[in-house]
Image 1: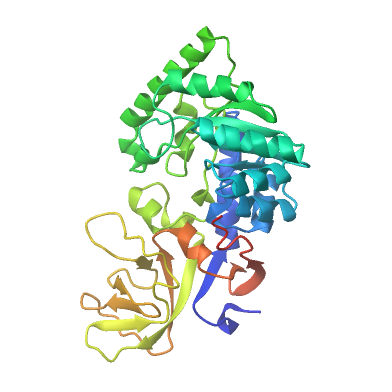
Image 2 (image 1 turned 30 degrees about the vertical axis):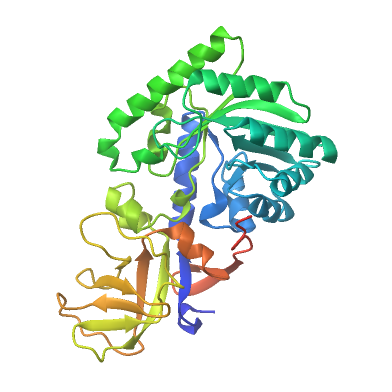
Length: 363
């Protein structure tokens, strides 16, 4: 099959670029002795998770038990759920998976610990636990080393659980690499305070899990970090490109759309709207919803449900009805989650058709 035979909108992944991205981060992690546990929320496809394992990853990260089950059914056996599971159904789902595979959960409350413990005991399984700490993003995570130590001790005293270490997400460092240095130093000081507190209490921290795609290649600069969980590095997207985290040559995924209308002066309409692209706005002064590969002077300015609105007032290009365009989405994770399948291409040939099996698994 060729790309020309695909109906639009269609999500295309350049296999050559993706494979370079896989190899590059795997090489970096190996060089710095970092365990790579990529976050599969970016692609939600077991086959791609296996590619990541084959390239050097130890295990995978997911956001919810529903994603974990899809990965487990796809043959993945070492899964971290990077989300605090506080409801009995979610705790039971994790405990059931933990009967015959390694499951670890991050959390930041005694309530989550107790829910997991009860579920693990009932299921006859054992669940690993990472205590989440807040290093500045202020989303989840306890706010002091003493709180982290208290939760770690609580976990060590509960049946069915095993304290594995600490985790953090430096989401506040989603900025150009040259502007991350001071923030990385602040995070490292925070981590050092935790190491000191745990050492005094004679409690080991086997795993310090952290990082993101934005800071992926600076992960070794975070004090004591030995595991990283980047997700978007596999494909990259417009916002990472805008931050200077990647180059255009590193962007593996584009959405192919067709021009369906040029009737309104200064506007070109394509057949991909809010049900095709992420509604995440671009980072920077100009608000757009993706980067048009064929013409940088045309802006993707608005989304209707089924229509993408392109502003052509600053372009000399004359778009033709039926013409196909390739758009780099702002946020790749949400874009992929809107599609049943995506296509791996090499040149003009479609080599792979991947079902997005964990699509919509938000529970």
